[in-house]
Amino acid sequence: MHIAVGLLARRDYSTYQIKTKLLQKGFETAEIELVLNRCIEHGYLDDARFAALLLRSHISKGHGQNRIRQSMAQKGLSKDDIETALNQSDCDWFELARAKADKKYASKGAISDQKERARRVRYLLAQGFAYDQISYALEVEVDD
Image (cartoon, rainbow, N blue to C red; front, side, top):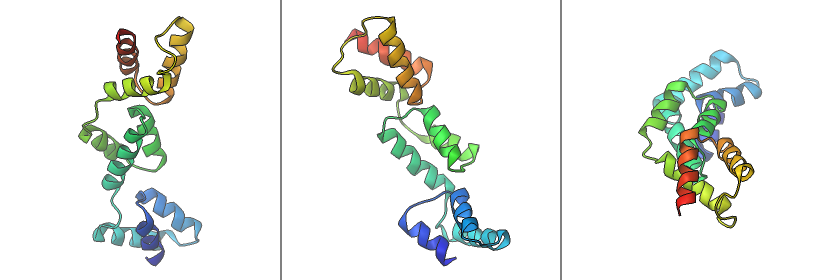
């Protein structure tokens, strides 16, 4: 219990991450489940809270929904927790995509040809944005 609380005192973790860390330290599964349940009961461990914190962190970095979903899944969050966090977010994903494109390509100006447009689309896809968000971001950029 002390190791789990010590880890959680430094920063939030998902249940999966704490379980993995305790398994790596050689604890038995039954003992880990007991500790996890106690941490959840005391409010030290909360996957919904962790998902909300992770979401805010990724939004501040300008990441899109797809990249955020992938990151949350890698950290062991359930699909329900991921979707709940994303649905409760008041982020305008279209404007976030536009801001990310503007920041990256501010010095390059308007899109000059298809090759440049494809480069920008690939970049925004890698940042986790959907095609409709990317289209909006690049259209708004052209209209400026």
